[in-house]
Each structure stands twice: as C-alpha cells, then as structure tokens.
Image (cartoon, rainbow over all chains, first blue to last red; front, side):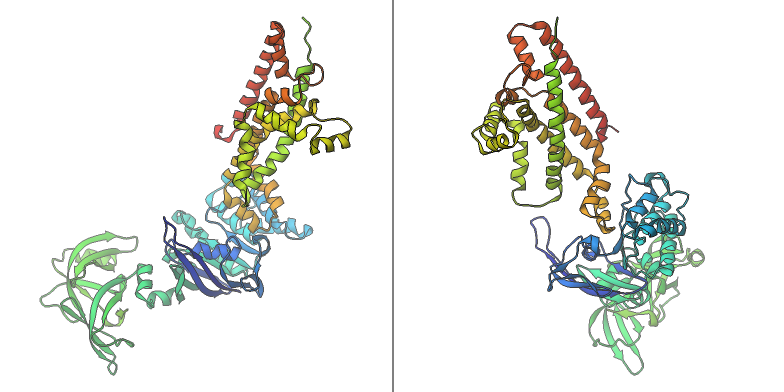
Length: 361
Length: 220
C-alpha cells in the first residue's frame, strides 16, 4: 500500500507561471488511475514516488517503508525504492536483447533465482520466441509486454505507469489493457497509472483520482465520478457533459422536485440539496442521457426546441449538436444510428431533458 | 637515403600514451560535466577547453613553470623517478595530452549527454548503481562517438609541435618527435626527409579522421 503526501512548489519564471503540487492520497492493490489534463502534475507525482524528483514537503510510505520524509530528512535514491516504472516510451535498453533487458533488472535478485525468473517472465508475457531479439526488432506489443515484465521481475512493491497507452493504435491499446488486467489478476502489485484518457480510466481503474493544477479535486470509482462530478471544474475536465447556465426557480424537498430556468424555457428536475431558490448554477447532463424527437406544436414538459447544427458520426452512434435554450455552446446529444436514421428528416427538433438525469453544479 | 625512423616511432609512442591518459582522465571529466552539478563547473569546462585557444608558447610556458625542475611537481617527480621530467620524451607526452584532453572531454561529454535520459532513469529505477549504469547502459550507447573522439584525439596528439618543442626540446634520438623532426629537416635543407615524414604524417592523419568519421553515429 502506498501512502503519499506531497508538496512541491515551482516559483514563477519569466516564461512560465508558478506551479504548486499539493496533494495526499493512498493506493492499494489493483489499479489506481491518476487522471488529469496536461500540466496538472501527474508525471511529477510519479517521479516523486520513484525518487527522480524531490518534493519540498511531505512523506511517502510504501508498505510501511519510508521512501521520503521531509521532516526526518529521508530521501531514498531511485535504486532503493523498489517501485517498478513503465515509461511512456518504454525505455527498453536498445543495445540489449529482450532477455538481457530482463536479466539486467533481475540482478537485484539472488544469483540462483535470476535465470529462472527471467525464464518465467518471458513465458508469462509471451516473449520466449522474441527473447533473443533487440527492442527495435520486435513488435510494439512485444516491446510493451517486455517493459512491464522488466518492471515486475524484481518484485516491486508498486508499479508506476506513465501514460503507457498514449500514441498506441487501437489494437495495441486493447492488447495493452488486456496485459494490465492480467498483471492485476496475477500479481498483487498495486499499480498507479497516469492518463488523460477517460476511456482508459473506465477500462482499468478501480479508483480514480482527478488531478487539476497540482491538486486532487475528486476521488472515487470512474463510474461514481462520471455520475456525480463534485465541481464544475471536474465536469469540465472530464469533458463528457453538456454544461448549461440556468437559474433555480423553485425547490421542493417534500416532493423531491425543482424547476430550472434555461434561457426562456423551464425544466423540471429533482430536488437539489444545498442550493437555494434563485441560485445561478450550471446544469450538467451527459449527451447520452438526452433524447431528441421531431417537434409537434408546443414543446412538452422538459423539452426544449432546438436547431440541429450538425451531426457527427461516431464509432458508436451519432453525436448531434444543437443550438437550444439560448446556450452559447452547442447542446450535444448522442443517439444510436438507427435513431438518427429514422429522424434525420425532422424539420424541427426538441431535446428532452429527463428529470432524473439533471444535476446542477 | 638513410631515414632515421626514430621520430616516427617516438611520436607513435607519445600519441598512444597521451591518448590513453586523455581517455581515462577525459572520460571522467566528461562524466562529471555531463552528470553532476557542482560549483565551478563552468570554470572547469572552460579550463579544459583553454588549450584550444591559447598559443603553444603560453601552454609551454605554463608547463615549464608547473613541471620544471624548480617546481614542486618537478621536484616530486624527480624524487620518485630519479630524473627530471622536462626535456625527456615523457614531457612530450604531457604536451600531447594537453591537446588530446580537450578534444576528448568535449566530444565525450556530448556523446554522454546524447544518450536518452530515460534509459538512465530506467536503469536507476531497476536498481542499477551509478557504476553499473555507466558501464552497462551509457557507455554501450555512446561508445561509437567516444571512440571517434579518441581517434581524433590520437591524431591530434601525433601532430603537436610548439608545446613539445618548449617542454621536451629537440634532442635527436631522445625527444625529437616527428613534427619537430620535420621542422629541423626543412631548416637544415634535408628536403627528402621532410617530404617523406610529411607524407607519412598526412596519410596517418587522413586515415584516422576517416576512421573517426566512420565511427560517428551521425554517419549511420
């Protein structure tokens, strides 16, 4: 188990703004995903844990071993930390064969064990046939597996992965997720994975930490975070929501209802605890939770008339973008292909906002 | 015509020895410059490069002051080896070293720095000591450039004239290197000897530079 409390400041420079990393988290068995945009400090967190970067303050504990403690003046060198690190470019030694790459890492183990461990890892990661080749002579998938095998061979107490799937094609990416799931099932090593890809969080993450500007702004399972982003900031970072300005007109805790004014239209929603009547808030709703249909006369309840701006084909369905409710940004709705085909000749549209899908931030 | 081959033989010996010393010392300095942060790093870098720009007479003067029979180092040498250092062929080695070292340090530093840092991070992460990291990762990835630099340093130390003349002198059969021998052959009107030595030295240098270029990774 990893427990980390980190603080590191970078003073503003003439060519860059200052930055402060200040966070606290723990990671247990399974995969913990560190999600955030570029520049949020994700890699800095990994580097601090691996010992490549020294924080200003804080404490890093790995299975009760102190890796770093500012107060006690402990800062173990990377060699002594026993954290596997899967680098973004894999960093397999180009002058060594895959087997030699593994053997290099296995030298921390007793001499008698090494050969067997290398053999086992080659087998486990389906690398036996390619073992005698150099990294540039093998496929991307083999390189990727070799990198993970190399990181795991010395039985690290933690595996750090720095955007390992960035830049991979779809096939390799799927293969990579499969390998990581295999690692999760066969090794007890906790993994800390850095990514800016929300899909990846869902593919792999049991626990997700959202990092923004050096701080953790939300924690939870990927599902819970997507269902209930805690702040507008998080909703923006996830990039998976329609965000519309609105005003709370009524709130009725007894009947668990509320009315929201969006532009010139009113929507009915659930009761929103913690808000007051008259609050100006942001309506937050996912594109796949909305529905569309042809407009027949006056819009019904929870419907807003909309003008179709464009339809974008997606691998799974079609994303429609509407101008609706006076929102300056388009309202996005995801529908199935069949749904779109049956409605594509609509002249006028309405967007349905199901009451139970509405959230405000 | 009877040609005295001694100057060539001496130059070869001087070049081999000074290149070996430059390799050992230069690699270490290059490693420090490439990997460590310390006070006076800029000064060390500049000091190592100084022989590139200073006139040979200035360098020769420094060496005479530093290693002469009256200097502490000169005395120490004499106490250990029983004979003075200056005006022996060993002084010619020091003179050649002065030119080989900056070449080696500059090129070796560039070679070490050109190795992708992520390999070094990976090695450290995998528990490799700095020693193991250097010999098993950095050097194998940089050896072609470093060897190219060594060939260049060897060629340069074959050809020193000014500093050698000042600290080793021109004693035929003892400290007369090929560059000095050519000078004397020209001065004394021995055109045949001068021509022969000039051609041999040029051919050797051409060969070494070609080798150095072949080794440079940029040619791959």
